[in-house]
Amino acid sequence: MDVRDDATQAPIAPSLAIEDTPRPVARRLRVITVIATFGGLLFGYDTGVINGALPYMTDDLGLTPFTEGMVTSSLLLGAAFGSLLGGRLSDARGRRRNILLLAVLFFVGALACTLAPNTAFMVVARFVLGLAVGGASVTVPVYLAEVSPAERRGGLVTRNELMIVSGQLAAFTFNAVIANVGGEGSGIWRWMLVIATLPAVALWFGMLVMPESPRWLASKARYSEALDVLKQVRSQQRAEAEMREVTALAVEDEKAKLGGWSDLKVPWVRKLVGVGIGIAIVMQITGVNTIMYYGTQILTDAGFAADSALTANIANGVISVLATFVGIYLLGRVNRRPMLMVGQLGTIAAQLLIAVFSLTLPPGDGRAYAVLAMTVMFLAFQQGAISPVTWLMLSEIFPLKMRGFGLGIAAFALWITNFTIGLVFPVLVDAVGVSNTFFVFVALGLMSVTFVKRYVPETRGRTLENLETELKARYS
Image (tube, rainbow, N blue to C red; front, side, top):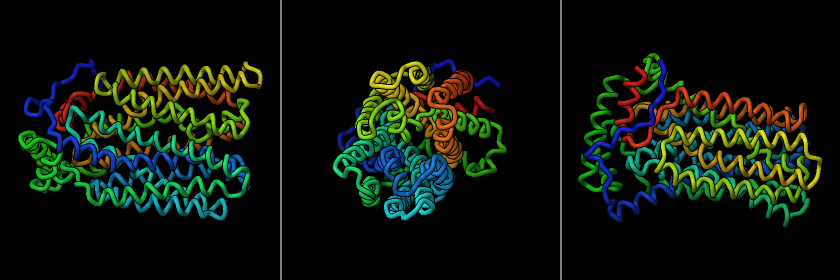
């Protein structure tokens, strides 16, 4: 069955049409978004900090190329299982309670990494930290999507992506500052890692006073509580109209017994999960995290000195943040699927040029700055288009009763792909060189464009309830 979309979009239901948002409601939405996205900030910092910490950790712990890959990718393996478990827990226990649990895991994992005495302990601690990262990657976008009005969902959910890249920028900046202040002193990587405990504390205290997702409450037949929450983030008239729609769909899903592994026997659900897995893999096989995790080493290989590479890598963090602002702006104005494809074509062009420059330019400042310019270009397309569209679409496409579970399955595939790339990249570069490694990513990128063009649906402009009805009809 060809599931291509014609890029037309269904209007938002008249009862839920865009309205002037009352000021207290807008303020409450902003507070919820800021607090919840501390999970994204921790996601970004804990994945980005290894970029600058790894060279110093390598000296202290005596890492080889393989154990470098293990230390880096153990977090990603933990994130794979954390996303799967986190999705199930958020469906069973609630989005808010799950985020509170994740805040504790973030704190414990970051502290354990800081105190790690050897490689084996570090791998285990990074795995625990990965459980929190994976759980946050599925729970926070779903929480924001279910709280947000349809017409503001793109912007609010994508704030989480903004916090992720802000966390990575913070990691790159703190890495450079600590390295310059601490010099070549032993253990300075521990200071880089311990900073992540602070936002974990802020997340825990903040979520104590945040509401539960109204759609999760409705899925548990707690309709009066769901309406109370909706009235905090909508006008009263709109809250009541939206509640009628949410309740009707919750009852329908309950009759259909949606909510677990058995749902994969339902053809339309199985196809939708397959599309979600494809979208998740597409995001990762661009190779984005080779730059986020190994960017300092890529720049060093290109010709920068070690301390200069750390400082230059901040440019990657800055462009990621700026590009995400652009992505938030575009998501409210253009369709998701074309935006995803433009991002893919941009990253393919940047990777092709990194490979060519690494192969043809002589070592020195010329090659170093050319590679830096292409990593910046790559991240502009990745963080401005691919990443925000991916996380937004994954938070939108799954049915209410299995939204956390479905996103968990897709995110499991995402993190397993990420884990594999993180583990193999340093070994592959050591074996065949930077240029040939990036030629591989170019080939994978071309395959991804074909998948998106053929199979990915358009999701912009629908309420979650209307979207579920459309996708059920499309994939049945």
